[in-house]
Amino acid sequence: MILDDVHRGIQKNKKRKRIGRGPGSGHGKTSGRGHKGYYSRSGSSRRLSYEGGQMPLARRIAKRGFNNRAFADKVVIFNLYQLEKAFSDGETVTAETLIEKGLLKGRFDVVKILSVGDLTRKLTVKVDRLSTAAAEKIKSAGGSIEVLEQPAES
Image: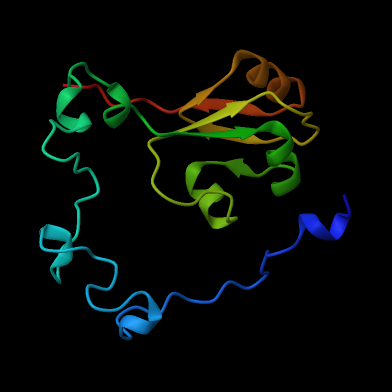
């Protein structure tokens, strides 16, 4: 068998199916829509979830349970190495200063600092939450920490 035989009859650019151009085209008269029926009419289209009258999957599956994601706090996480880069010695780290420096964008409820990286600068940190290891690193660098009061939930 010759390799050319494998590729015989394969077209790289298939011609477009021209519909409704008379009987000689092979797609004339009913234009590939068959006779009568819903899909032969203009304006007929099937809904995305339509299953031919069968009860759709979205209605068959039980809609139960609860997910707390909608009510949970949106926590923005920062690492110590990010603070090292963005802040100079003696500066105060708050949500407002993070927004001013362009590090924080969008909606959030809580700012939390984690201990990834090293901190050599003496910073005053005023945030909602921070890890124990991050607090130790900030204090060992000579900085101070102030954990902001969380509003009581009613």
